[in-house]
Amino acid sequence: MLQALTLILLCQLVGETVVLLTGLPVPGPVLGMLLLLGWLFLRGGISDEVGHTADALLAHFSLLFVPAGVGVMLHWERIQGQWPAIAAALLLGTLLTLTVTALTMAGAQRLLATLHRRRRGAAGD
Amino acid sequence: MPPVTDTPFTEIWVYLSASPLLWLTATLICYLAADRLYRLGRCSPLLNPVAVAVTLLIGILTLTGTPYAIYFDGAQFVHFLLGPATVSLAIPLYRQRERLGALALPIGAALLAGVLTASVSAIGLAAWLGADIATQISLAPKSVTAPVAMGISEKLGGIPSLTAVLVVSTGIVGAVFGTGVLRALRIRDDAVKGVAMGVTSHGIGTARAFQVSPTMGAFSGLAMALSAFLTAALLPSVLDWLGLVGG
Image 1 (cartoon, rainbow over the protein chains, first blue to last red):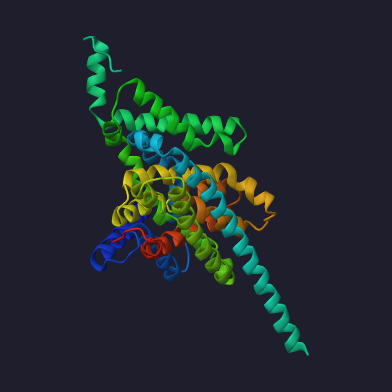
Image 2: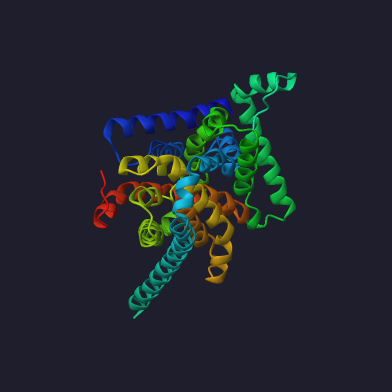
């Protein structure tokens, strides 16, 4: 647990440091995730300890968003003044994004499958 | 309102409210209560635990007259874990490594389409309905996980703490309606469902996705991580293109 947590924090620390040093437009934790992923590939597997620790952190992922959510208290006035715009962006924008993303991926998969079949068909001729 | 008379209760209250322990514990209790309610309601997405916990806490803070800054002194320990949890997403990703290679192209296309739709639709709808520039920019990265979105918002002239709230709300909207919308679209592949959820609703969507299946959760986590990258890289140009001041 302690070793795994240290590994995870170390990846984040290296990620944050690299972002600060290079001005990369990506956030430190995301770079840290890629570093950890690279380390897992190098090592060729996940130790039980790292697996359990990550699963524990991710099991209550939504809890971690609660403090930021309570921050809505700070913005009542702005939200009250502009609520139709904010509500529309949140509801319609979010549902539109979900739909476009799902249909694009499903469409791209179907397109690739068709191309594969054609290529195989052409090779068979 | 805080109690004003000088009773033993006041003394205890003054002591406790000055330490992070009280609000840290309150955050965990409210979340556990919300989670219990969610399970009692057979995991109905309408009883989203984040939404319920936030509502409970705001009620308590309002009743006790506690400002957000005091609350956050305690809650920051939970907030901090967002970073390590984001790093931990490497583990479910690694477990899906075999499917990832095969799906690289469709995932790439979906990410690009999703990231552009998320930011352009948010800015467009908000501008059309009269939101000011600061609100529009704060809305733009709302589909990206909180620590990342706050950083983007700050860099581009938005209000980071407002962005955090909008990010959480977007996550809740996706988690509440996402599975229903995907069913209506007749999407059955857990990889596609996961990617759509992760691009749209980041960590809160991912938490919901893990409840549907580990595969959907892993792909949601992957999409959330990659869309954080892509949004950070693309949003300055998108704002520039839409004529909003960036940089």
